[in-house]
Amino acid sequence: MAIPDALLAAWIWRLAAIPGIAMDPDAVVDDIALMVYAFPEQAEVARAMLQVEHALTLLVQQRQLGQALRGNLAGWRSYRFQSHRARRHPADLRIVYQDTDSAIRVRSFGHRWIPNTVYRRLYDR
Image (cartoon, rainbow, N blue to C red):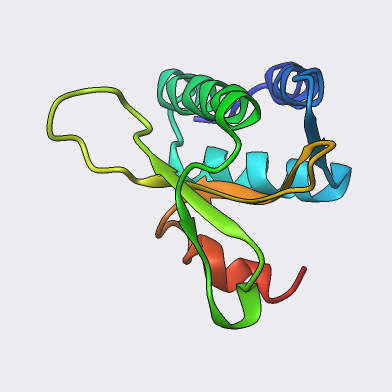
């Protein structure tokens, strides 16, 4: 099922409006498009995007959640969380970010594996 453009635009604006978050606008559009690919039903993508919004807000409040990354992504952190808050549902979403003291700089967010690993996508950014 195709997700309406107006809904995609609304998610871009919602994420951009979170105080304390800094994101590359082109990367946000790419990440949201990939979320739609990973969650093709409108209800699924909406539920997952609500979880992304909640996780970004949590990162601004608590700053150092998740694990420090190594190798090419040294200096960044990965926060993992569920796309659907249910018992035993895997933590299938990731946000890769840095705490710059003035903001949480988000490099990418998305499904852990679909369409490919969120970490592999970062090598091109």
